[in-house]
Image 1: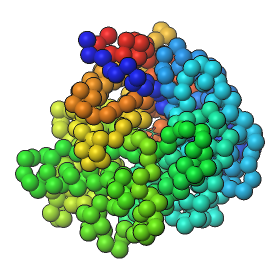
Image 2: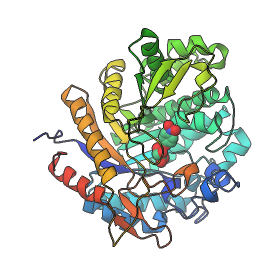
Image 3: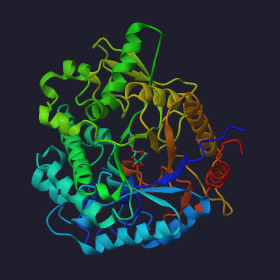
Image 4: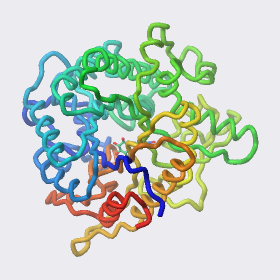
Length: 460
Ligand code: PNW
């Protein structure tokens, strides 16, 4: 029987705005997602995270369900605006209390908290006063907020993730405008990305300089889809590599190597901000592990600059900077997000990271799929999701067998939740949530994953 390593970390993941609700309770300030989702037309059916799964009030029940599944770790995020309602200056003790209680409850249940400091719900005040991630004081504000989290929670939290998916913040938030703050630009994503990297690095330095006695780990989570060359031609192979560098190495090269990838610098020229040499030193080496969110795969082909069909896919980045055409194999199954199910792409992605960054410890901090699940006679038969997880976990196991240091896997998501601009129809959860009654029900895939975790093997 194929087994995962004995110390493999099995977890599930969520984020604050997608599950908590209680958007303006107990002193929480508004975030850019409260504002963005209240603008007509920005989200599916005008839905918002104002109530979401009401995890704010139901977290004890949720932890009970996690315990039943047997998960070893739970990745959640802190809403910055619960801690600092305006993003800075004065602390909201009621916000501290909520996360402190959540952490205590997890530890009592023997579930290790993995805490993300920023999963996109920026305090609105910082957007209005400082232009959000375009603002040059953001790194200081983020580091000050992180400092308070380390101080108040670091006695119990030993696993920190600074930022979730800066690529999404930069491209979908500042490029395509489909996520908060809704900006549309071909240059701002690189400016926002730059401030995000600096903010991450500053927070890591605070942690290492002031809180080393807490003996925790800190890193960042980036997302990347695999890019498979459409043909064997050198041009398509180069296009796929270029696409991966514009997607992932944009954020991970500065952190692992000290600067942006050479080909991005060449192609972007003045559009790409530069790190001073002091900043390069500050940024380099600021991740104790490689956090990866991985969902799908696309073919990449060279584009000679004449094709008009460049931006058809939401996750291509700024394609005119890359000269890459993306496409799907018509044989691939699609999830409700129209993301293709390609387990071997996950294995290749892990191998690419292993090679480029010299065998780092990798954690898949998100992987999962959305379907239109239905609750029928008290059960949810989500066989497609079960097959998805089986395929991707087998790919993970093959990568581990091939020498990749994959140390853990967090399924996205613990329960159905507010899928950002797509609202509540896109169900990613292992647990079904009835958004009228807020009742939770484990899906078939959750019961299967429970067995996987127990036996440390996907052959169950
Ligand atoms: C991630 N893309 O978002 C987030 O971390 C989660 O909050 C989210 O619910 C989950 O994946 C599912 O979407 C992404 O366009 C959003 O490539 C968009 C993309 C990737 C990740």
